[in-house]
Length: 224
Length: 410
Image 1 (cartoon, rainbow over the protein chains, first blue to last red):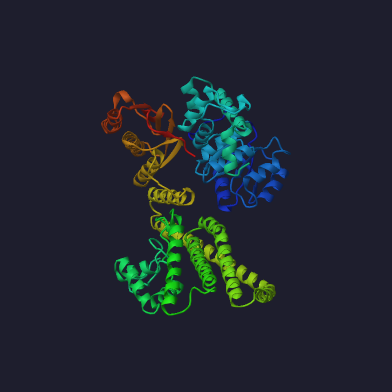
Image 2: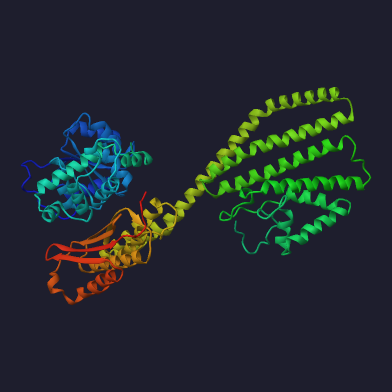
């Protein structure tokens, strides 16, 4: 997400407890230096096994999860942790922002997706959002969602899961154009909370839909 | 395959436009003669005691085939090629018979027909080994050619069997005509048995040798890939790192270098090889890369769908470029570009996070936007809208209505 957005209204007394999972130590220390004052970095891990152990041990609020990780990738961490620890939220980080990465981790249970080029302010904001149970969509993820849900016709699947509502589509388009949630809310004359609800609903559809295009795409890219 | 210019080019058998082994065409090409001349020459030489035939066979056996030209369709693929080959082989066989009778050797004898069969079988087998060598050459060209090799192998099996059957039949015939058939059959059975035994003994060696060959080839492919990556890294990443060290005092320049290099590397890693400039998105990507390099800014492009380029799409790309340049110059930071192609047309948004401005009080330097973007879009029947509020950044929306030949992006 872009644009610093104050989340003081949602800020709780204790700082959020965060675990960093990335195989580049340099990147971890960089992130720690940037956000360490505003969140509590309680653990770090450099590969899949280490990450699973650390997350189970410290039970953080949010895990910053690198998509490309030795030992099976971020997806393996998600698969090992989400069943046991439903309260731990995952925010995926990647350098590439390739659709493969995005869809893989989101369908694996990540609540958001940002690129490593994100600014410290935006990252802290995204962590808070994910901790609150909201979804964090980068413009490219929104673009991908629009692409995957673009054609109107669906198979005999769950109609509610397999298509976006007109409002959700509008929200996605604005996010793809680079709008922050606040700007989306202003443009559509909605509250920020409603925008967040729409985005979360889109995330749920992205995770659960067996929509033909999505399934075919995912199968073609071997992410399911 | 390239040769250093100092080396004289080798004679190679032609791959295209050949009748038999490509010997005549190859030599003609080498000497710069018309192919008919060498063909007639070989025929004439044949009357000189069969010398032409022997020479042709020798050339066929020893001259290497010219390397495949990936762009050109091989004769093997064209229809009727096999027929021409059969006719050529038949002509060769008739030639041999005529030659032998001219030399006073009895060819109408009972053994001449089986001998002919042997000859044809050998010819088929030889042509086969030609083709598998071709497949091998192709396999060197790229990894995707491995499938080609497999197809070639599958296609070659019936021909090898045919060749072997012909040789076997011919041999049997010769033996039968020479003496009593049962004795020769017994002899043949003994020979086959001996061959089978020998095969069993040699099998482990052959298998080991084959495995070594495969391993060696895999290793070679891998080392070639590594060499390519090394070359790419050297040409781009290492150069850029050097440049970055040298311009460490100039943050803008460092960002620009890093961004340009990142983009180039990404394209090299992730973009499938293909036509790069045929669509709207491809054109936008290249324009954006240009602007990023020129103005040291970051531009993110998100697209839904894509369309083929035409004059109107090109105008849209040019207008978008102007809008991005404007955002880069006046706003800085990340410029967000979103393009959506649907059945009704194309919509394109350029959003920046600058200070914004009051559109009603357009400063002089923003006049460029009006001219280059709005007027340009109007000329191709599109629309352009600029929305900006002080403190909110600026968004330029461009729209172009169908028909634009929409096709989905996969």
